[in-house]
Structures are given as structure tokens and as C-alpha cells.
Image (cartoon, one colour):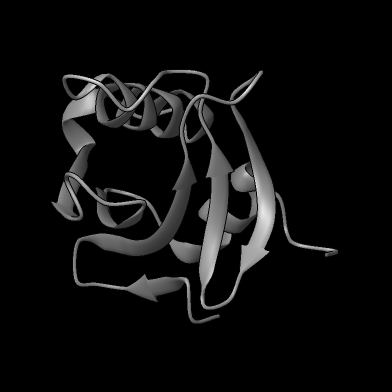
Length: 98
């Protein structure tokens, strides 16, 4: 999967974010990225904070395990998640049937 890459200490996710949505949810694939809708608006880092909290909660990890690597002010983001393997990420974020 191009949106999910394995690292030595976890995985790196390639994400496409849609802020200001009605609810926060994983939508499906958007090109080479996993699309996630966020309820938070793209103002003052609120969407980034909600993204980190959402991923940590869905993956049952502390927030400190989720790091935004790239895309702070963009819809296209790369996020590193430490302490988890690819199979767990696919199980928790939903194996795409899209």
C-alpha cells in the first residue's frame, strides 16, 4: 500500500485531510493517500491537533507516538506512528474495501 510504509520503529502514513467536515472519519483512498475527514477547522493548528488525537485514539496509542512529519499547512500530510506494525494500522483504520 502506498499510503502505508513500514519504518524501523513503526509506520509512516501518507494522508489527505479534509478539514471542516461534519464528522471525523476515515473515508478511503484519495490517489496514493488515505483520506480522513476532520471536524476541526483548518485554523490555528486545530485540524492538525485533531488529526493526531484521532489517530492516537483509533490506534490505541499515546499522542506522543504520532508525529506530523510534513504538511503542517497542507491537506497532504505525512505522519509517523511509532510502536505499531502495518497489520495493526490496517485493522484499526479499516482495510479498504473502497
